[in-house]
Length: 240
Image 1 (cartoon, rainbow, N blue to C red):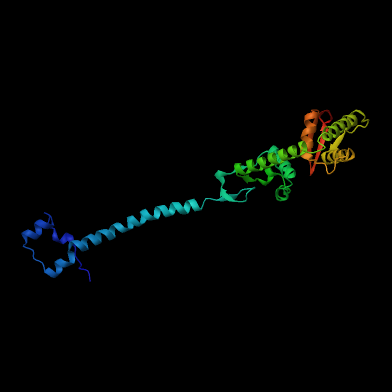
Image 2: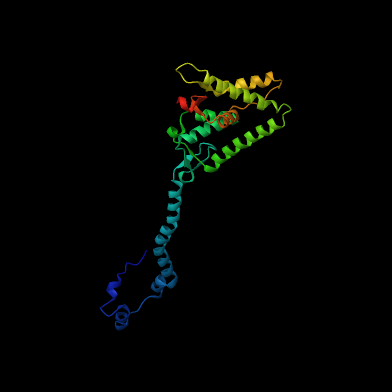
């Protein structure tokens, strides 16, 4: 059992040591052992333990706080990351670019995601590097198509069929007598282009809608492209 000792009783006003000397204080050897240096040091360590515990708890608290930071899924790679590392889809231009990339690459998974609505309304989040990866994939694919056309035995037939398609579009504009403007579906123009190549003797012509659209917009600056549902429509600027 610990000894009930009130230190204030050992001090008569001049300090404990002076009081003990003046009164000729004596002690039992067995009692002295209860207050040796080792036990005093242990007691001091126990008193200091709570502060040490608080110090070790602080990093844990910080770890818990960092673990509590909400994470968001990237629209492309579907991996979770802290929102500060992600971009937000906030423009219609980005929405159009993503839809075009998905159609160019025939990426069924991406098309399914985009069919859920406008990316601005969906408030998608994405890694910038993932978006760049998608753009690079589209560019690489279009470059491969261009190389395939240039190495095609019937490569001289493509300019012929394309020129005829341009003439068809311009004639449709000139000969239109109706009040309604002339509107061309890109899918329809691609079919006409492919059919004409086959008529010229080219087997399995390599026709890509997105590439054809870019070529037409370059050749006929008066044309603009608009997306309507899943269709791409080409119209003359003067008719808008």
